[in-house]
Length: 608
Image (cartoon, rainbow, N blue to C red; front, top):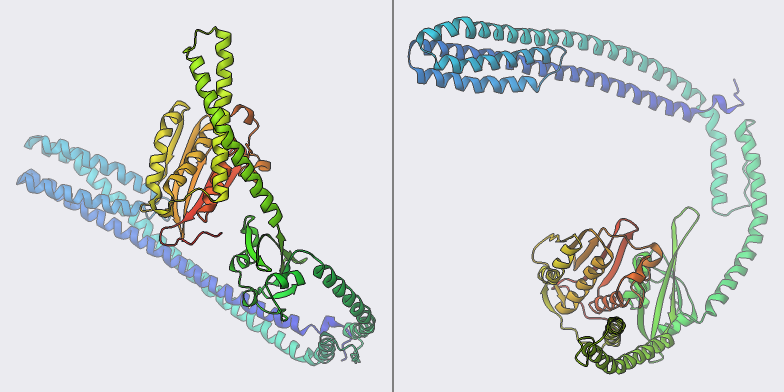
């Protein structure tokens, strides 16, 4: 009979069903065996309870013998036997209580526990009585309890024994019956499926193979060959549609080639006319596009497309940014162009396709030499002005201090308030000038760094000392959570102490209660230091700016002291150590300021 529909030709579907059915059968057999094993496990548990019962009977019988011994002979020997078997009895009772597996077992164990406790309690009364009273206590109280406990233990043993018999019989019967039924059904279905599959195999494979050949030709971009299928079923219809698709693909191919060539020429023209160097690399870090400006910067003469970045451009720091652009902060590089040193700011972007798969990375180097020169001019200007301000501010500070202390004559209250306000402003200006001078020195590289092997734990402990009193006054717990010993870094101890002091001071300034935790730990080649508080937190819009000059975060920043230069100076100090500083914060949940510096023995030379 000729079958014209795929409904009767789904050989593959039947084959899959056979495999599934075989898997289900195997799974069923496995579970039935597991059921039997589980019941056997229960029987093991019952056996343990029986073993515990026998041991408890043996222990209490020895205790009874000890009582009889105390009635007749040595008291010390009888007491020792009684106490030793008391411990033995409680040991087996505990094992029985840990092994409750059937209904009623817990109730019996509770009764045994209660009665045995009474039995042991009566022993002290028995032991302290005279000979006549001992016989009375033994016959009227201890002996009846002894018999009741033995009866309860035998009941426990019988309960477990009967459970073993019932469970074993029921489990074996069900497991054997299920296995027989499952095997029979599996054999029947498998035989039927194989016969039916063999009959229909030839009916469906022939047109599918023809269609498969046609698809391979199209995949190889051969649009000339058409699929010849004589079948009248759905596969024949599919073959006709496939041939129609090939005809349309030939037309689209001609149009697309022209468009691609135009777009390629347009993209290359745009890239080559960029004034900034641009490099595009694929997921293997091979160069797929580079403009003329980049070739000139890195002195590339030959064609470098398809070559690994580091093979032709010896710039490992730039390559680190290309490998992981999202994890890097903004940084400038000093490169030579036409024998002149120029500053470049790197910008990298990973391109992801619609399936969120990585395609390539675009790297742009922006020439900021002029901006760097302007920034240096600005720093020099600020340094000069700050230096000129220092002398008059010092004189003003001394003069106001003398007037406020009434060294030049008595003041009324109004005059004193005005002079104190002026004195506070002079103090604030002096602090600002000092911070500006420090920042200018660091930025210009004029400040000297005395690098050495330093114990970071020791620096933290010494830095914390002046802050404990201030923390106590604000009811804040200041804690050094030391993670490990011997945390050595390669750093300038005074500068690192200044950074930690600034971070703790900021935390105390903005927090009104709670706790501040300082931690230091080794992270590979680096030492990580963190200062965490549970203060008000930092708004998201400020977190990327707080390390800039004159930026202070918080809705109540006008009420807080500070010049807004502390974190900027801290960043410059950490950068001078070849390190990095950052903040993690959520509003209302506190902030954690962290920085890392080189671990001693792994230090690298500072980058210029």
